[in-house]
Length: 294
Image 1 (cartoon, rainbow, N blue to C red):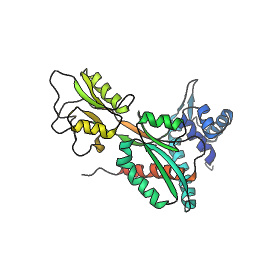
Image 2: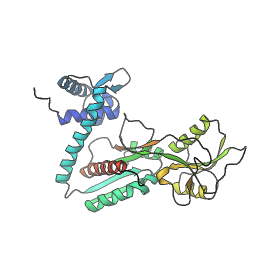
Image 3: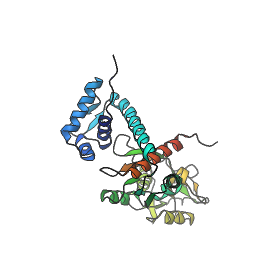
Image 4: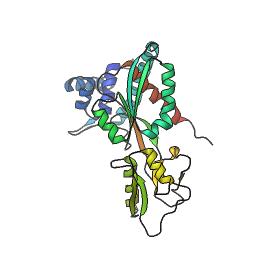
């Protein structure tokens, strides 16, 4: 018997349900009715002879067969998009607005954007750097076509994971913890994910702490740490010259990883925005898979 063939439109609906966590939200995201989305998923399950979702009143969850299908569906959709974009992108033009965390933009994203602009000189990029809470607010108001932001590792949820950050306690090279006193911390304001990581890790070990310095600016935080005002949290690979990891030396608790996800604005994106999204996912995927330098 011939295996069932996949309808690209149905696979797109399937991935949308996974990314949005429900049939109703997926329907709004792709501009269809909820019954139409349910019918497409049922048709997909019938053609496979497998359940791909476990359903209850609050959420949908992938079955083991659904997890397998998701990997292939994402690859099929990506290949289809890449083929269309690369065959028709010679004269792609327009403005693409992207929001991103400042540290990620300067460390990893700058080279990707530079390469993209050289390949597509008719596309104008508008890059907005900010903290995640501000990026989410701007995204909800329609200010960005694409957004990169830091979040708790989710895997199954909205957006596309493009990077995983390993976090480190960071300080000036000669930093010392004051004996019998709370640990001085240099952190961004609430609800910054690094701040959440730092306080949760210290509280779990019942280590006393105090906020010595708060700034919404990455440059301001790093300057305060270099001046010896306290200890901060940064991704290991983004620790700048003049600062060092002090996790082991000062016997500080291990910090859980964070995740960077790419979100597309609801509705139909421009060809330029879709092309940039594909470039970011592909480039970061290659970078992440490279073996570490010895």
